[in-house]
Length: 131
Image (cartoon, rainbow, N blue to C red; front, side, top):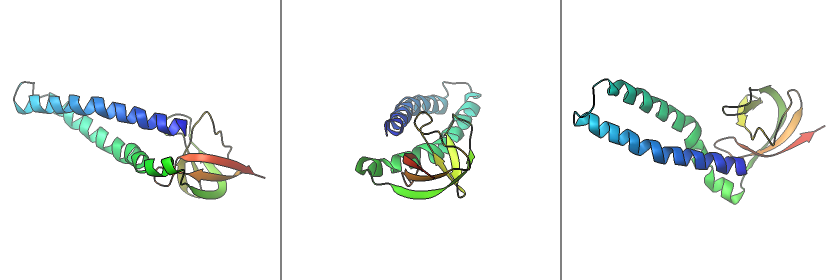
């Protein structure tokens, strides 16, 4: 859970820094205090932030009540694919992608696991190898 809370704190701090900076740039552009080429930067940045927030941050924030209550979903299956460590540290079981703490859980393809995970972000909280 520490990895999940750490990611949540990092995302929150990043948001607290980037939103005021982006807002200030937008106000300066609207007032004509910045060069017009900054519009390209602002549009690119906002597109990236919206996509990133929608795919990573929003599901993690939605899972916060479940994480605090330790209310998890469970699945059992064979791991089909493991992505390169880093990024979202994902792997696939029965066609569904899950995320993990890369230092705590090192799954192996073709082995059967029982996972407890947070329902929205699919972040794995606990796992057990099944023989």
